[in-house]
Image 1 (cartoon, rainbow, N blue to C red):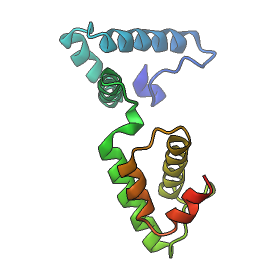
Image 2 (tube, rainbow, N blue to C red):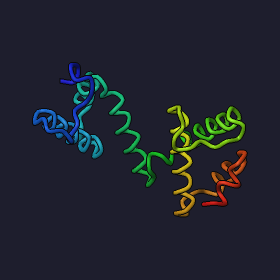
Image 3 (tube, rainbow, N blue to C red):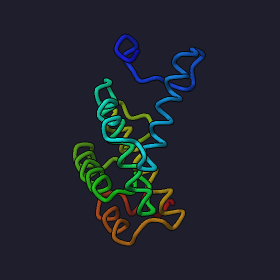
Length: 146
């Protein structure tokens, strides 16, 4: 089914077969999350185009939830985005990315800044992360508007 469609099935479709297959994958995700999905079943799923990446997403989500975090709070993601934001600021004369950025990278960085704003407003941002953000040009002014 995946090969001719070019994507994994979605539950938000009118097509009965696609919804049925999406439900099957949802059940597999549940089993995986509860560590009840057998290794041979995981291997069979990996043979489906796109499922190796999906299994990786399931693993990351399960690991983050097991330690009480959310997937976007992973340290390596923050540091990677921070480096990309720094490069973006250098390339754009210190102008922060906006919602209507022409590039996907710019839009992604705008979304990253929105996540940081929400974390700051909800008191979830660590002092270390705040210091890292404030070290970038223009971020002190931006953070003062939060």
